[in-house]
Image 1 (tube, protein in one colour):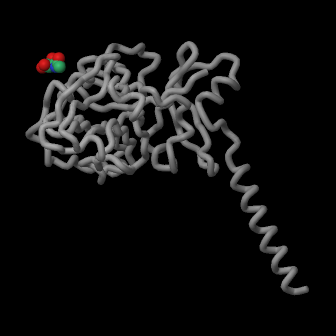
Image 2 (tube, rainbow, N blue to C red; image 1 turned 30 degrees about the horizontal axis):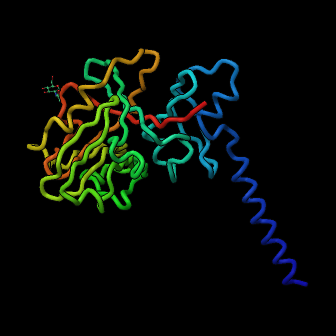
Image 3 (cartoon, rainbow, N blue to C red; image 1 turned 120 degrees about the vertical axis):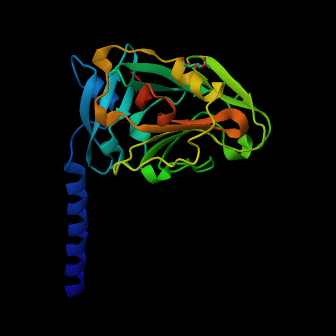
Length: 258
Ligand SMILES: *[C@@H]1O[C@H](CO)[C@@H](O)[C@H](O)[C@H]1NC(C)=O
């Protein structure tokens, strides 16, 4: 009898702690839910709940029929995965901020030769199957993997797509990097300067040149702008925020369809 009592007490405690978790945050789980639950949804900042009931800040960028979710740097620290942020992985919207305050957008997608075989891999603070970035000390980070190491290691034609244009190079030495990564850098660490003096190229600067002005009503607040780096295999190139004197940060918007 005593054992039974102890057991039921334990079960009760477990149940009540589960209830507590699921009721501690009753906000929407996604920008899509916010749009659907509002009579007049407006692009801007909102709070969402993680699947485990923690609040975090996002910027919901609404368009006709779709939108993009940008997650704040602090918000990235409470997420366990990125699955709440998107419904469509065919492309992402990258928004850069220039030092003059202007913000600009570009759609980034897989190279058309690979889009069916390798959709972009969305990962949070890891790069499973893909090359690990240089600035991992600035984690948490959002990792966009274009080609997995198993493929990128070959001396083949590789690349990605920016604003609908394929950006192509031939991997010259089997270096298997093929990614764009965004670092929250909560402790403001200095970047790893291993690549500081090299690797600017047409392959890794074209996406910046293809950005176009976005309306000021869509400008992201400071805490949504990340340090970024891009690396493209042997002879593709490497750049980070510091490679572009005109750019002071970038953010990645994950697409959802309405
Ligand atoms: C991008 O713009 C920079 C600065 O204007 C220029 O030096 C570079 O050649 C451009 N790259 C491409 C691929 O057009």
